[in-house]
Image 1 (cartoon, rainbow, N blue to C red):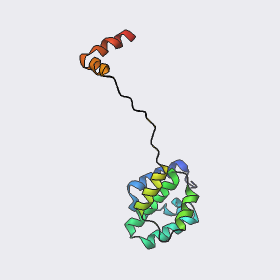
Image 2: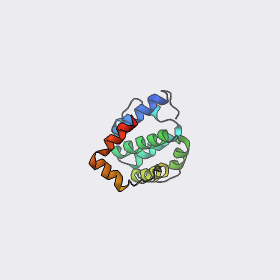
Image 3: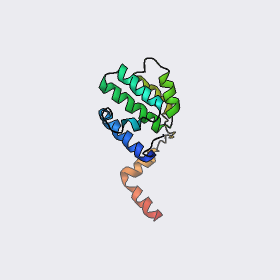
Image 4: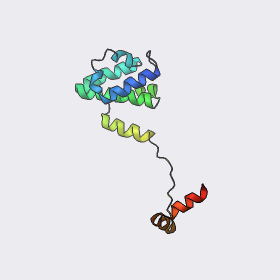
Length: 131
């Protein structure tokens, strides 16, 4: 993400704003946090389309998606083509689902004997044998 404050600081500011998105509206850093002219356009459109609270939350969420998923340019281009802008819930649902991955964790069922060892306390003597 392009930002004169540096990527690490930018991440902290965006994540802090995600907790309190209303601070974005009057932030002295607001124009710096909007990384490209396309994001300035998105902010203007969000202010026109949504009420002030929704506009702040929408814009901060978009900035966070752009930063977290390293998709600044494609995301801005996609959103600028939509009229009206998508509602935040629809955007979150579509965007997060696209990037969400579930780890492949194989299930392992323990044997009945293992439970018997656990309940009887015989697992302690087995561990002692390994020491």
